[in-house]
Image 1 (cartoon, helix red, strand yellow):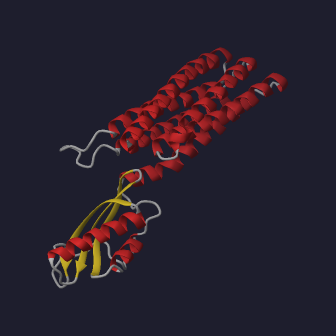
Image 2 (cartoon, one colour):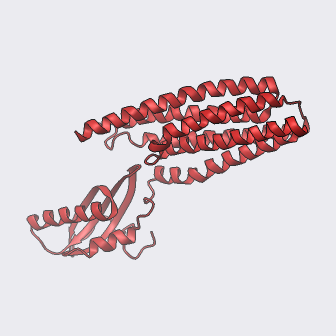
Image 3 (tube, rainbow, N blue to C red):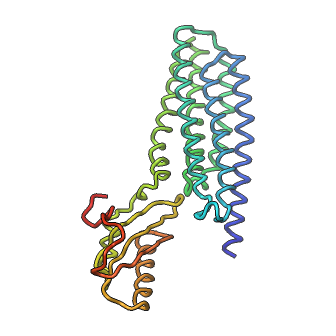
Length: 306
């Protein structure tokens, strides 16, 4: 029953993504046409941002489908990390788009062009409605996925940008302040770059198999060593196989014990790691006290800074 419920939720999520992709692609086309007809750089800038959103949703959808594939001989941990790779691609693309917008805005400062204010206001108003609809479609899914969260934040920022474009178009109509279009473009670009650079470190950290956020290796070692019959813990590695799936491997030094006691201790430690630190996959190598470890120099001990 649980698997059927999960499958149903994933299918619904895919349908939401497909709907979001469709309306964003249509919006992008509308904004590009409106930007060309009106001469508005900020409208074209917003269209490029929307295009990156549509592309990121496509990548997210493909990654979700790949990530569901079960482990095999080629990928023994499975394909879940494909979503993290997709997030990295999306963020790098977003940063490139932001830099391009800065370049175009600075060029427009040197060579101003007339802008049709009404076209800007109408198209940006339509964009705002579409952006809000897309954000609603992806909001629930964004809570548990870095990939979908990035797409959700993109659409929220698009909605904010659309509000700004409407304001710029209005100022052009009322006061003839054509420079507001260029300033707004720079503001959109700045927000895009800030968003991309703020999320990039977390994505790279996960791909580099860094220690999961909120997990301290010293705390993990301390909890394990406080367990009865555990003399010490070393060679500890903690990483995320994918989002929300923490893995651990460690060498555990124990007192002299028979095989039954060792198995019981392993089960106890695995339960501790799962319940206290959210470790879903743990590999423990048991060493008897006084025996030499295969690895002469442990990479992490309780006294190391992790």
